[in-house]
Image (tube, rainbow, N blue to C red):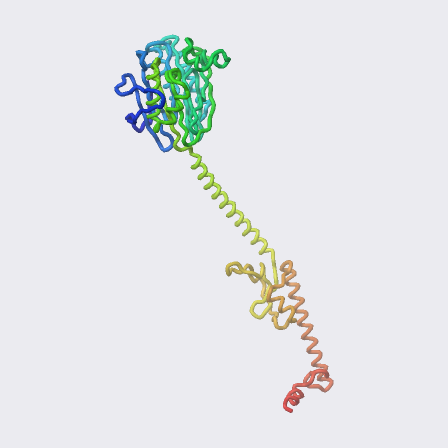
Length: 423
């Protein structure tokens, strides 16, 4: 029984079946079987569930609520096992998180356990019915896993199949303790004994963890109707050689039937098309560019502010036409924009100042502040006044000594110069 959601196509993939090393039974016309597949831009999936060749009824259930997938194998005989697995997938579907949170995914399986235990009290199913549960939630490059029982989850990465879940079964305990081998466990008379599952212990807890996955990975979820029939090496061989998830699911079920089909068999195969890392990288790059741009803009703004504050704190004496002026700022330009402005114009003519000072005024004479600028202007004015006073005094002295031109004795008069020039 299945609870599919968000399925883009329910038509089975029609592809040749050619598993290496084993004859595979045709699945055409199989009764009590289900096949569903679909895809989106991130994942692609295919599912097949079959009653097998021995059992009369399919007690397996599977859940498709992309990107949530689960396989539940019912226990408890005809009808009761089917009811238990159906309750399990329904509860997991209702309680599972919307993100790859393995703790919450495990909690949904634990909720399914209580729902199965309480169901007979409500007249649903039978006392003692139970189920396994193996579920995954895929989000980008993260896969949350939650699991209880002997259904399995495999990860095919770079051509190598790895079982990521641990069977909660009697034979697995024997294998763990070294009493039997994995091959012997497949044929052990107690291979169907589950030591932890849904429906018996209210304190039951689910294993849960998160794995990193990447584009190109393939995930296989299955009931023990597959893993008890064929070896992991053959599961790997078929998973590697199958083109699509649906083709892989079909061929795995076919191989289990060819090996005897002693149990119901359900297989979900999920391919990771896009793990989201490239998009995350683009987002990180974009965020980095934006952050850098913001930082540069902020730095530029701060620089402008600091520059403006610096400019406002600077003063210098410069030339305004033919006179001296007091400027606030610095004697420079940026893209033609002056970095200073006149705050005080004077009547001091530049030509009346000594040549060295005139040269300095062209470049700008820096002063500490406006007060110092005014004091310097007053000094210039005093120097000019003093020079003019001395010149007037010399002229007066020259007149009083009979030299109407005001020339000193050392300096020849203009008439003498002209006379010399005419000879």
